[in-house]
Length: 212
Length: 196
Image 1 (cartoon, chains in turn red, purple):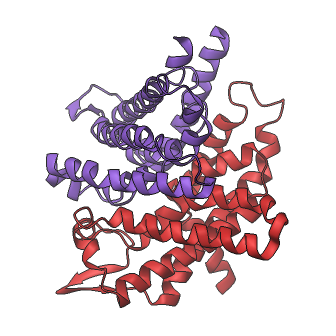
Image 2 (image 1 turned 45 degrees about the horizontal axis):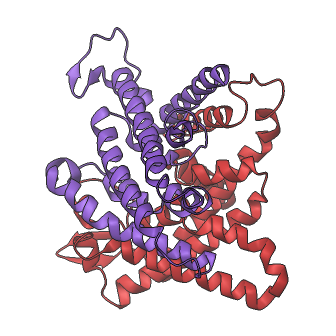
């Protein structure tokens, strides 16, 4: 039962179908027929590590003031620095562990690090407070006199991992119909990217109706 | 001249290359939103790509991409502060759009992928012109999607009522954005494949 509810949650809160985050990366990967599973796992890993690092900075090192004054204190820079450190760290580890063989995986890391799926996950988890005061969004911080973190470190890791896995679910769904979308029977005007957009739209509509 | 303006209609980044889809699908539900996204995207992307061309080619690929992303993030701060200063009430209540999607423009595909593989391969005098037309292409699609979705979903343009017999509010949802974008891509392909 828990597995079913986890799967439903991966669909209902899917990054691609409900928030369009990472759609460009997914369509580019599908066009090139890349190993989408490998890429999705890299995205899941980088998202989880990014959320964990952001959570530690906010809860242990008192960076939470940045959420209240995001632009004056450079919140976008902080998130980019976090992803940069992880991106370079992963590349370094790959080089150390695999040597020459690492080249075949480096492209996945290049494609996976700086995109809306990873960066969007951090922004979803830790959104600026001035926005969250008035608008209901699924963020980790609330104002109740003072700022506090709604996530434990493991919660932050799970949030990042879940969004990465939802990317994987979307990638599998699209790769299952990829051949049909690029098929000769598909009208030329719609073949490939336009058909993929409409397919994602229809799945997104179904999820919207189910979760209503 | 043709190669310089490539990217505006022919070779459009959104309709032909499938880049920067998220802000168009989620944010461009009205013309007002589309204009805000267009201004933020244009300022962040143009300045960042122009600055980043001066970074040393001796840096390895990964370090260059990190530098591009950091420059984009640094540019986001003044640009979004400007947007917020211009429309504080609207900005603070626009939800996901201003909390997530506008800051995400700092790592858009133009900056972290296309700059390295396309713009920096062009001669330095031509690059800003080509970049300008690519950005114009994005802004054109954003505004077109914004206008169509505002008319179909709310029966207005910039808040002014338009006589619409039937409203299809679903077009303001993400799925409406995906489907509309798919149809526009197909139309774009039909028009430009005939011309080509």
